[in-house]
Image (cartoon, rainbow, N blue to C red; front, top):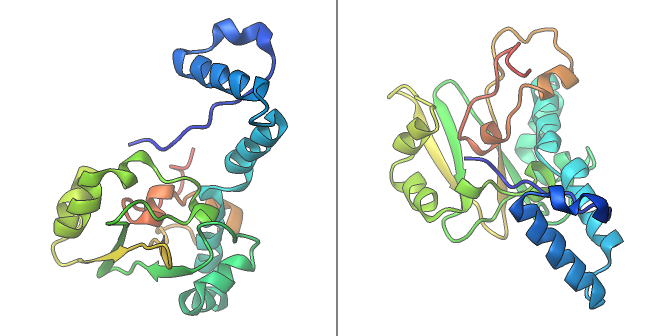
Length: 212
């Protein structure tokens, strides 16, 4: 259930023959569009750079880590996630209106978009392929416990599962339970334990020592 991977659009033609078939097709398409004057290679590279290094799950992980380590921030995040997230510099397209939902020992949250694939790009990057698939979008509502089990997440029958339907007007980020044994860890160390799936609700945060 892997997410999207951006293919680097290097303009060094000496290595074109070394590209895999998909990368070669992307390169050929880029070349044709560039020659027709329809795209600017520098602009394309800037977009790729943004989504590879500036937008993605690492942003959401820092939000979660701060909520774990700063009770005042966690309270703000619960009340006004849009503002709290923006205070860390994460805002913009697909993340204008946010709500944070907090997992608890007796409650687990799962996010889905039943209509299409609404997703908070500014904090989680591009949505994984499975998030957009019709089976996930329908079954996450009908049988969330079964769907989570397929992700390898077996929850006790006593755990209440809440499903949140993301829309164009409101998108969600799950704050997973803080793993045990993380007392004394700094925000950078905590952020390394937060996975993309845990911020959708399809997984737990990693245990200490598992991030590597």
